[in-house]
Length: 262
Length: 117
Image (cartoon, rainbow over all chains, first blue to last red; front, top):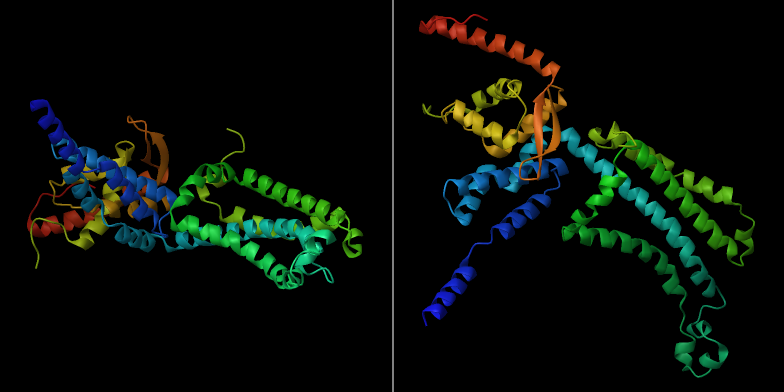
């Protein structure tokens, strides 16, 4: 009996116990939602909160008391963000334009890739083969009801390309909204390790995408496209290299001087 | 209007630069430790809000007076340490002269022994 009631007490205690890690995580997410804070600043503030909590706990306060006192001491995430902007408005805009340019580069790469990947599909819908029935061999479409066989698919293709591009934007927005961008941190650290590394990888991506686009479009039986040489595609891709220059220029200063190796 | 236990906002803002530079001149440190030290030194009279320290630190860093580096702390987590630069030491010297000039002027009025600059 005694054992059971003791266990019941333990369970009760567990249920009402304050989850310190969850509370810190929630605070961290609140902070992450502030667009005015740089990454570095966020990490520093989270570390500071952790130090303050540890300090209060050492003085004998429980988890919950320590958390709330530390939180009060560090300040509300929104107020913190305001103070940081006041201290350095230029930095804020540098970071915003940096990510804007990076978004533009990703969008361009995606756009070229999506266009060429969708082209074989679009070929199937080229007039006069724009009806649903043409997707199948004759012996199949013969059995389809006429309304389905004659369903015009051309409008779908017209909207397909823009909506594929929209998908990328949507996916990014969802990721930002759910705070999932943190998971891309290792990629970011790798890519922006130094200016040289970023420029090399970005140029390489442009070349790879152009070559893929060349291979796909050249394999299509379209007279207009067949005559084009690889140089034509590369030339198009290098038209986007100004974006790379802008990004490299706006890179966080601590990464600019880092060497490629090390 | 003036209470005697906590410094006014203007004075806190003005004194933050010489305080930070002087603390870092004694050796590298990180945000939490700096705040604790200021609290300790002033006997609680200089009350810095923790979150406001970082914008000041970052401004000093931008001005080239201090440098920073992420380093592993005892707990194994990364912590950002700040240390004073040679420009920072020069700036501290100027700050020191100016603050002591104010101190001495007030000291003459209040009949306090002057401090050599």
